[in-house]
Image 1 (cartoon, helix red, strand yellow):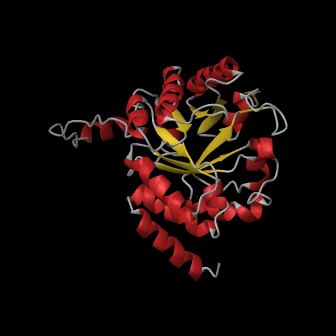
Image 2 (cartoon, helix red, strand yellow):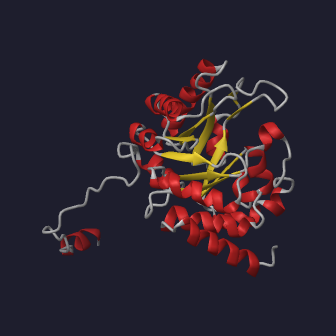
Length: 295
């Protein structure tokens, strides 16, 4: 029977060459299928960008404003996030396993807000990352900090483990209070992370010269939302960053501390994925907020 079916096969379409298209994400063309598949759970293939929802703050801050109840404050936002950035404890205890977007696990930690924050070590095993079906591991890198070498070594160890299993590594550049948050420093920190193997990098947006940061980094950059801004300003920040070459945003406080977080994350999506102007996105936010009965 099998021989008969093989003999009758005729639809080879030899006149149509097989496609060999590059992967859509910057610097990712030579990864294995599994790594690319996980990256496609972080970045949208149509826009090439991501809206990451970061709420891993509790790993050093404890419960903070907007994160008192993950089940009530964060879970309603998850349908609008391409990716969640969180700790394994919150993932297990609070996030429905029906969530199908990318999971980025906080992989470094140690000190609390009461201690020197740069003194971090790797805080979970690769077995745990695989067990929780994560797309990426996030590790803090303190370029110029007291424990710079240790944090970079943390990152390179995770890169080796991640590459072995097809899991991405997100290097998160931390800027100490005594460091200048300018393009020169951000170029240095992001390039070091990329050179040593990070799959993509999270860093801060700077007004002067951010185009040089994204141009000189050979892997995607997503920007950190940073401190809480008024909603209009946060949307302007997202717009300026993606216009300057960022591959998306990783926002926390500017979403979950907004007056209407569900409206805010949708407005951020309009900027990042649809190219909406900040004014248009803010008008959407205001309309959605009023319709939801907030304010």
